[in-house]
Length: 480
Image (cartoon, rainbow, N blue to C red; front, side):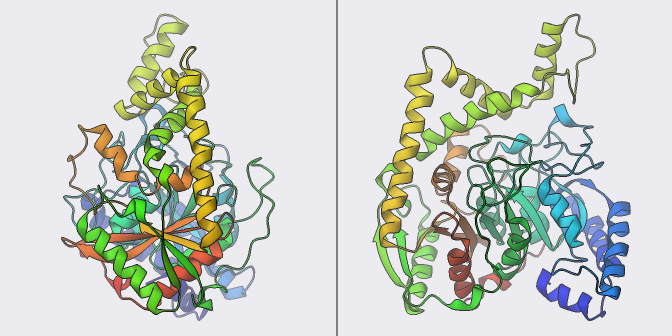
């Protein structure tokens, strides 16, 4: 069941949060050995939160649409006293002394945090195969990946191990796993949701967002997450609408652009066909659908893999064995301790990106690589601006293929990086975008991406809700 369906039962006292929470832990115990969505579970803490939620529901004090609802949190968001690892050896035993703002808002709303989900180490990956602890499997086909880096969160929701989940999106890490796992995933506009307490990968790109079973739940969770936070200097003071209320407005006279540059070479034939059918349905439902081109998108992946590693190189310099996290205890001096701690604590993909970023920022190469990438980022943003002069929303695949097999791309980093070709441009431009199911290929879900103007999440949620209400794709469930 969805969060809004369960909330009605909880409010009507037909179900208690304690009963609901226990049922999810029973399902986790049944499935987790196969799915491996969670890094850390907190049954004791969750049941205590559920008891408090039941007290609030009974007294009808401070009840929200998420009071008593079990939620999973990606393990790169700080949870006070609950282990936060970023799926990295270097943070294996780190217990934050504070909550991320989004976690604090969940707790204040009475949501029940059941555990922390697996991810590619420090959110660097597209398959959740780069975790230091385990590989997460796709509930639709356990031989396939769930996408990444928020693969644990998407798999948990798709498998019914959590009602809703939080993910983070730096280059597609919410939308691509949502597409692979047949659920809804939203990357809000950069600055719409506080990043305070999110362990940084690339600070100008990272954004927290919801992963849910349907668009209504997505709107409910965004209502809770969105809004200015004085603890995050990149958080924007902008009005936040009630996203749940705008869903039913329909899409008549909405101008929708189908991005031709993301419907050509490199996109699977069945994925293109499903997205084209979705665009045709938008037209039948009253939208005006036109074809648009954003020529600079062909440079997006190269641009991203200069900017994101450069920022990662800087952000991950703090993991040196001195202040917190893993430390090599056999080192004889400070320098050897730095070297050995980082060599042993980081995985191969994280090391690769640190080296890429450090090289791009180094003397003699800064102008040729990093500075040039920043200029191309501006050109990509201008292409989106021109498209939005003509359109209210844009359509594309969320991923070029359906979920690929575990191990299929681990020896080919470039092929892995190209799996985010449709999502990366949105992060570079700082825009909101959503993925929702629009079909199947070889028994695996296909994701439709809807992109909106900055701080116009309501339009893409309304478009997604209208599409969802006129299709059956979201009703399919993984038979894990």
